[in-house]
Length: 165
Image (cartoon, rainbow, N blue to C red; front, side, top):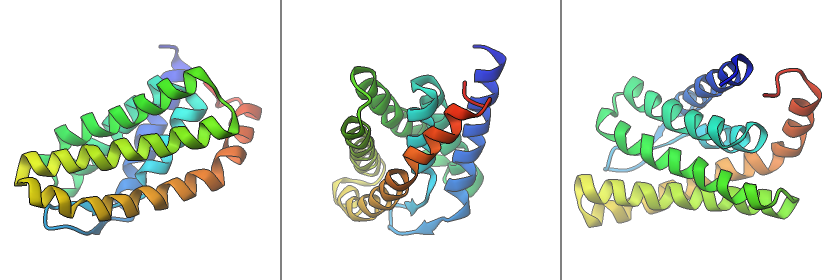
């Protein structure tokens, strides 16, 4: 990795951690919480590619879990959020039209919802997994809306600036 790419990735790891921590609303008996980290993951993956997206998602989100005292979730978060960005990145490799960008965000958020359902099922049982579906769907919708509102402007800014990797 070149210095510019490493620096950009580090910034997005930090931003993912920050936006995951800044608004943390506990929502389920399975220790889950709603946060705003996902829209950063989606923007990072779109603007800077799959590597930056996956590293930002996996490291930034699992670091937030550790800092917030959700250590049992950190390894699962590493995988779920990493897969979320990987799915989006792979989808965007085929096409980067407006429609494919928006669809890739939906797919990424579906990976998050399903991933945390299985996480809670593994840790606490099937019924607890079911209780995480609604709060994770709410988180997905909120983060997706923020992403959908910002992505065009974000791409324009990053492509016109020297920070783009």
